[in-house]
Amino acid sequence: MDSLGSISVFVQVAETRSFTEAGRLQGVSSSAIGKSIARLEARLGVRLFNRSTRSITLTSEGALFLERCRRILAEVEAAEFELCNATSAPHGRLRISLPQVHELVMPVMTEFMALYPHIELDLDLTDRMVDVIDEGFDAVIRTGKPKDSRLMARPLGEFHLVLVASPEYLQQWGEPRTPGDLADHDCLRHTFHATGKLEAWPLRRAEGAPEPILPLRLLSTSIEAVQHAVLAGMGIACLPDFMVREAVREGRLRRVLDEHVEHAGQFWVLWPSSRQATAKLRALIDHLSTRLFPGAHDR
Image (cartoon, rainbow, N blue to C red; front, side, top):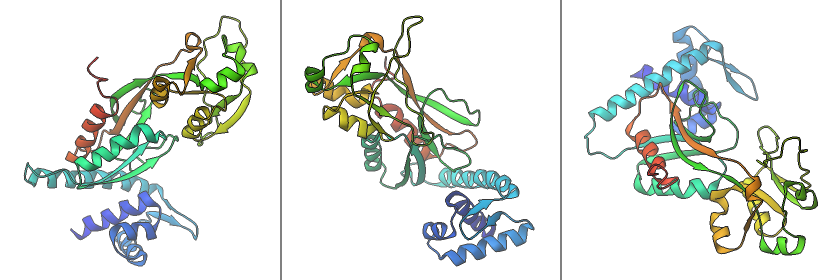
């Protein structure tokens, strides 16, 4: 059991890259964490971490050991669950990476918290492509078809990008009839924080037609900032339909150039295939499947 405790500490340090943060999560001092890692390295006869005054990184031996340790802890957790009373509620900690669309994901996650009060959530909201395995996530929600063979996947629902503007903006500047008309409009653009790349507008073009000019009025790494600006009448934006559906229904936004926009995307929940589907993880996956896009699997 002492070895199991050392493994738990090692995984915590590897995932947080910090003795101090690992100590906080374990409820002990950073020096106690450091001593535990030192004893583990002495017992194994290898160095698990490269330490400097600024950072802690895994050695190649440490990275190999981490993968095995995660499997061990997952098996222990699964064994504990099997021995528990079958009626006991799911419990424990889930580390989840979510896209930066708070209005879509947070109501679903807070509903999950209310349903499962004994599950602790550690949420990372980002647009970067995290490494689910190496960064120790239990599950992630992402768009696009999964390509990592190490991951299990379940589709959650479909969305479409649409162009929108406020009625006030369109009354003042006119409504574009073709993609080329966008050259005379203010465009509100989203850029990916991790890469700096502009999110493309999915405009359908006639063969041989030049790419439309999109004059920038706003450039933001936050898609919700773009949403705020378009609602304030600052220009035309390209946003997921789920972010603007209510505003369009209420008349606060109008869709434009629908016949020139062609896009369909899909959200997926991904989790490590090597990880036992514990009760808490199963509860999360089932909840996301039914609540993120209600009715998506009934069509």
